[in-house]
Image (tube, rainbow, N blue to C red; front, side, top):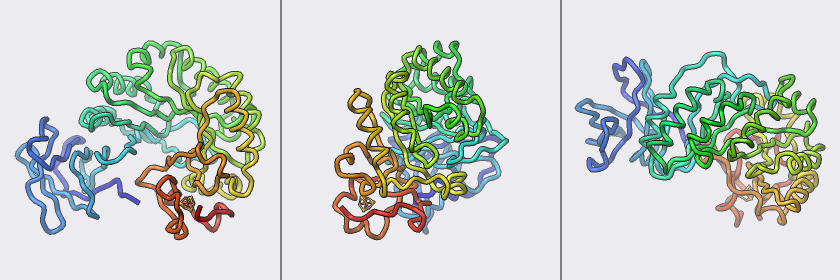
Length: 362
Ligand code: SF4
């Protein structure tokens, strides 16, 4: 697991500070750039506009081009952008208005507004980066979110976003902002767990959520937005996957992709693991049916977070490596597997004792 916090010598900050780490003076072009001046005794010292910024890295990672966020009173910084990684995500809020049984990031009441700092970090990111936006529910702070997306989109046409949202908060009046930001600049990842209203509402812990989601998806469709439908496969909804495939085809075929996902064993996902985890290595048939139905009708379908050996050979082409590098691991038997390079492995918090029953090298 890669630590997304890094120890620093505490700075006397009055407000949050965004810094890009530059290991060569020639790449320092903004006042947020700190230039490496010393690397000794396990510490990295940077010059930031005449001040010293000292990092105490854990491993031998390369920090050149990374963007960090230092907060007042803290002796560690958040690694917002890792320049060498394809997996950079801003957690913009921990507030949410749903209580999903498998939530990996259970909601909290308080919110700290760091949208300005996130925008600064995005502007300092490497060329062509895709930045994930997650929560909580980012659209609880919709105007701040849209302001950030708009500002970055205008200044950095090469940066795109993948925003995870519960789809509860879109209004027809948002279409104007979405068009201004650019429909190709944002992929909206929206969860839908069942074609059955009651099942969906029960999974997300909110009465009326399915109907509100239908309205939200309608807004996204009318704005020509790019949409990724996301369905975590669980014991609660696996029997309805074929119906959901029908629903996606008949009602939501404007979506760019329908992602069938495996659970993360963390947060509420850990609390509810025994009742919710669906062992797709033991019985892949319901998932296979949903894929077959979708592919036959021209719906792009994908499997996220499935170890390759949990998927029958005929369906492995639908299972890209999707688990972020910083939270990915492999098990002992993976060292004998020919497909390891193509396989996304497991979440760091996966426990094989309670997990898939039929895995092994392929
Ligand atoms: S054995 Fe490991 S590396 Fe190979 S497919 Fe299974 S999980 Fe992936």
